[in-house]
Image 1: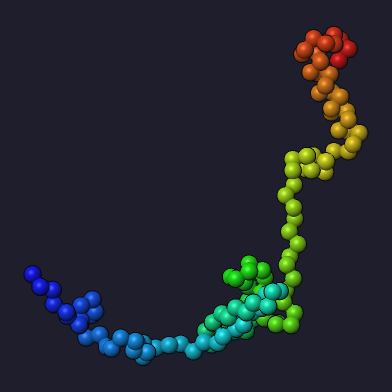
Image 2 (image 1 turned 135 degrees about the horizontal axis):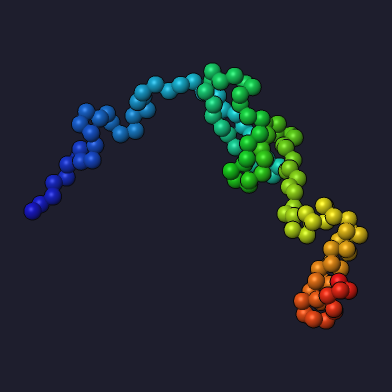
Length: 123
């Protein structure tokens, strides 16, 4: 069985030449450049009829992950992120040092009573 070399294999009947640029209507658009702190430029395209106040002032740069703004000379600074708080940090926000000492002493006394190291009436 010989396989033929059909020129139209995989294409639609009536399709124009490959690479034809005038397929359909292209809406007018504007290019907006954004720069991050490392000097990377990212171009985003928006419809020409979009009001300027709806075009974002900053985006996240896809190349660096840093915030990128429309002013090349003054790119936005990296926002300060809050470090992860431990359970102890949250407890320290709610309790004073004196309250913590009292809670610790109460817990130790309960433990000593359970272990039989201190009589129950002293606790």
